[in-house]
Image (tube, rainbow, N blue to C red; front, top):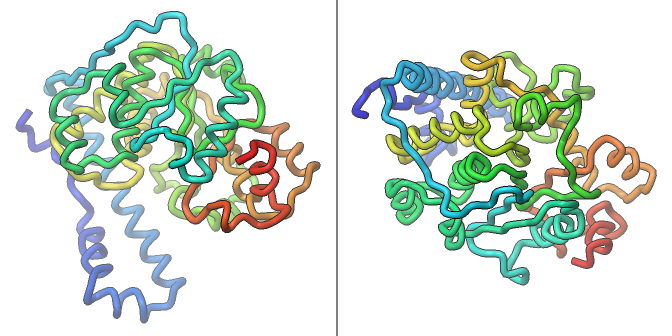
Length: 340
């Protein structure tokens, strides 16, 4: 396992940029520089770091396929054969009164619209009833080197690999009963489904302005898949490989090289090494449409237009609370609809 090819390395420009964004340099670098120029530099630095992470993943993937890396395993602790499960995770627990407002809303929407699925909600304690992770993972959770967000990246893969079902982030709102996502027969063809970047997306500039960290249609961008919603059969080849490679990463590393390093892994694995296993593309802007209108004045016609396209909606809890809810907005409508 002591293989230098498995070591992730940062872009040198990224390292310099990280220093310049800290005291005392940030007062010159960030505060004095025009905002448009600063944002442009940050975007270019991010692309360089994405490329560095992609190259690191390429080395790991190639060593893996050559059989030069010891496999790391997780073990299911239950048999859930025949059960259709929605998996959700909130690290600190699911006591309703302690959840953020957006998570409360999504919680109630999932309960109402789970369809013929059952919901299993996990936290930092009860996940151990379903999955046994290697000791090095448990230690990194304990010492804080693996945060909730990136542990959940690992957990979703382990659960879907072992049991199948649907992973929904705690910030996913459902506006209709959930059913197997069968757009163009994607789930049947590949055994798993995630929303992905589409070149045919309309209003690309709008989406880039909405979230420039995630949305990009530049060729250099390696972040092209949404992992907040994953449908998968048990023992799916792609999901299993993603899990094994993520475990290999965490055995060697204690710090993530990029917030979207999972997405970069999928881009490399599905784009270069296993294109035949890449699931069909369904536009990943679709689950974001509703939230892009979240604080706008509510319109039933506009809501119907959105839900005709999609009934799975990605929200965010950042900066969103009932105290900041605008009267008669889409947010206000859903708070009342689900009695939050």
